[in-house]
Length: 73
Image (cartoon, rainbow, N blue to C red; front, top):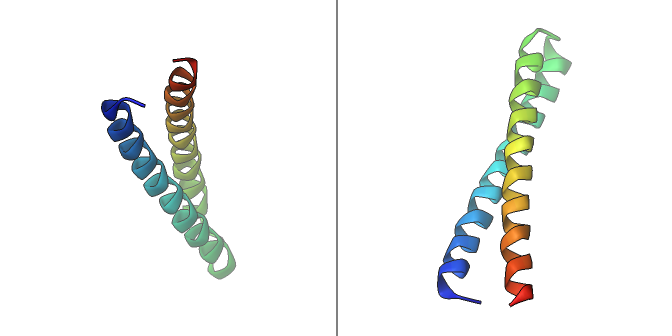
């Protein structure tokens, strides 16, 4: 694997990990809010969670593309 691809993969994995951690944090916050007050705030958190999940999916696709290209070499 070329060194540039390795650096890029490391960066992509790090970003993906941060996104996943933020998703988990927001899910826990949304659950806690639903239990305590049931307000509209969990709705906003759910929209944020969905956006982060979409972004994490994009990063997963980019990682897969890089790995696939490396396998084809």
